[in-house]
Structure formats: C-alpha cells, structure tokens
Image 1 (cartoon, rainbow, N blue to C red):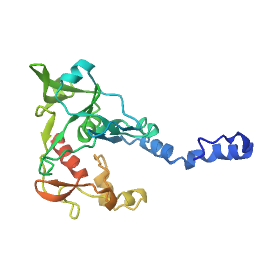
Image 2 (image 1 turned 180 degrees about the horizontal axis):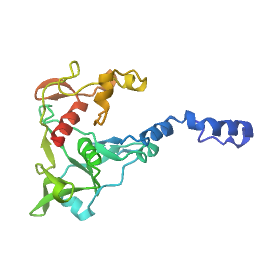
Image 3 (image 1 turned 30 degrees about the vertical axis):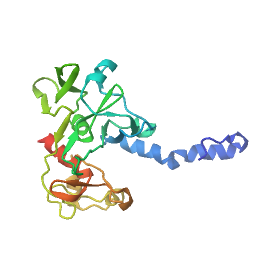
Image 4 (image 1 turned 60 degrees about the horizontal axis):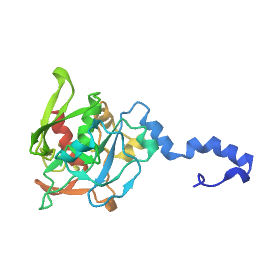
Length: 252
C-alpha cells in the first residue's frame, strides 16, 4: 500500500522504521524466502483459451521452438494466462499448467502434458514436478511430420540410458490412469495432511514421516474456490487429485 506513495515528506524516522520492519511485513518476500530454504517448489499456472488477458509472470520456456514450428505443432494453443507474481516466480524451481479440460460430457479423462502459449511450450504440473524431482534440465517433444503439421506422438524425459518416453495422442494428451475414487476421508490411495497443521507445527509422527522425501501437492478445501471435477469413477472429485493420479502414473 505504501509503495506508490512519495514517502520523502513523511520524515526520516518513518522511513527508517519502515526499512527495518519491511522484511517482516512483506509476506510475498517472506514466502519467497521460505521457498528457497531447501524446499524444491513448483508453482502452478492457469491458462485460458477464451481470453487474451494475461496476469503476472510466465517462466522462460524450457522447450524452445521458433514461430514457424509453433504454428505447425499439434498442441492446444492458449491465448491468456494467470501466472505468479515475480518475487514468487523467481524463487520457484519449476512451473506447470494446472489446466484440466473435460470431455463433452463433463468428465475429466485426459490431461495435456504440454500447453502452447505463443512460441512457448509449457508442461503440465505433474510433468514439471517429475522434471524437478529427477534434476533434469529439459524435455523433448517427439513429433511426426504429416502434411504441413508436426503431430506430437510422445514426450521424452531425460538423456542417455535413463531417458524414457511417455506416449501421447496427437494433441499431447494422455489418459489419466485413476487408481480409484477420492481418498479424502480414508487416505487409502493418497494421504491427506492439513496445511493448517503443517503451518502450526501440529503434525503427528505418522504425518511427519509421510512428508519426508515426498512429492506434495497443495490443494484447497475452501468451498468458494470450487476445485471439484467429475471423473469416470466419481462425480465429485478434488481437482488436485487429478494431478496426483498423473504424478503417480509418471513415477511408476
């Protein structure tokens, strides 16, 4: 709130006090420092094909393509996005799309592993988490020429003997291999741990062990945000768990 105000006329005492307490009251900077304190963080980006409005930052693309190839490659093009503010963007180790496009009947059966924005190709959240988890620098989009198009057929991750390919359809989509219905109440597939308990250091020993050396997705339970999807096995399903199922499949 004070940033756009000319504080020169307020007085030296006020400015000195502000400089002293600013690191404590700047919650964005505090959050960024926590992200850089030994925790590898991947942030989510929301893309939009219905508007050209853009908000905040997009990361530098990992996969470089020129504008001519961008027009030929068969991946869904987005025209708008909501990214992260710069101070958080600079602190993150990766960025992935959180988009999930349902089929015509409203069921989420498949997820695009890549999304295109202009000349940039950006991965989905689960794929980016796999890249960071494996200390990899890049991906390779595998295409096949067909007429004037470059049709995507797979995504290659890694190099040398450790490289592996993930087959996709021509739009870089894969079917989500769901392991079952929601485990929000019983933890039978993916354990749920309260973010409030984490922040207040109120975890059981079992929960602490579950978080050690783990890949963690931060979701929301706030009713107004409405992060609910319909999937083949359940009509009301947490959207964040679509990413959990994809992450599980990629790890396996």
